[in-house]
Amino acid sequence: MKYLLLTLFFVCNVFGQETFEEEQEKLLDYSSIKNVLKSDGLEESKQKRQNLVKEIKKARKEIKEEKFSYPSGGDFWMLMSEFWLVKNAQLLSWDFPKPDYGIEVAFKNLLENLGYYNKSFKVLVINSPTIVHFGLPSKKDEYIFILSLPFMRSLDLTKVDLSLVLLEDFLRLEQQFFINNLDEDLSFLGKSFSTTSFDKKAIAKIQKKYTEIITKTGFNFQQQFEVTKKMDSLLKSNPSLWGAYYRMINKIDKFVKTDLLYQDYVKIYPSPELQLKWLAPKKKQL
Image 1 (cartoon, rainbow, N blue to C red):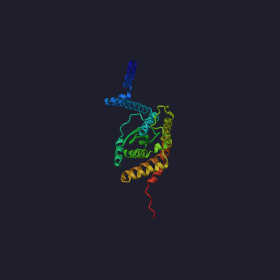
Image 2: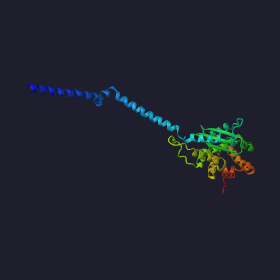
Image 3: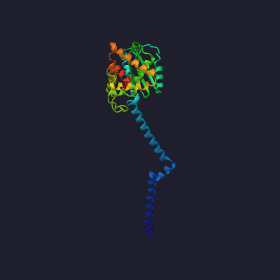
Image 4: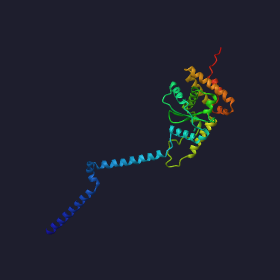
């Protein structure tokens, strides 16, 4: 009996020890205090911190990609056009003292009279006959125009005439003829070069094409026809403006045929003589 009691005491003591160790393990087991953590908001706080870290990493990645990304849309064309103007400052001779010719005000009034509102533009007067006039792409509803002072003086163009010249260039930009004529791969626009090198060759090719179009190839007959017919449509409701446009084209036609300095004009804008035919009223058949 004595040994039985001792054995029973020993067994109970052992079982008691195992129960105590199990309880200690439970205290260290996260799952056993999960409900307590939830009630204290600790788990929720941990999840919020993890989400915040993810958002920060994502934001940093986006900032890095944006920092090392090619501009897209109008931002790209504004940079390309302004870059071309700076690169060709010597050719264009735009950095010279000049008065305010009032061209911007006259052109803005013409645009608004024709229903074109909220258009922003810059007119760069150059002291060179190399480029007579041209419109360069920029941001949405923004435009850059080049006007040659020698050309303006040689033809004695009025502010109305010059506004009509700019209106033609404006319509070409609206139709994106210049960008279409570049005929370059623009798939890289808006993409990141954070993991690759900046493609200088692509930019150089576009700049070269700028020069080629502005000084040599210009626009084709179909594009010129579309612009002329659009001008005809816009100005028909105002006979005095339509007459001024017709007389201006006639003046340019005679001038470029006689002055060798401007013989390449018809390569850029083909051709004033055809424009006069397109504008002439059709004769009624008897």
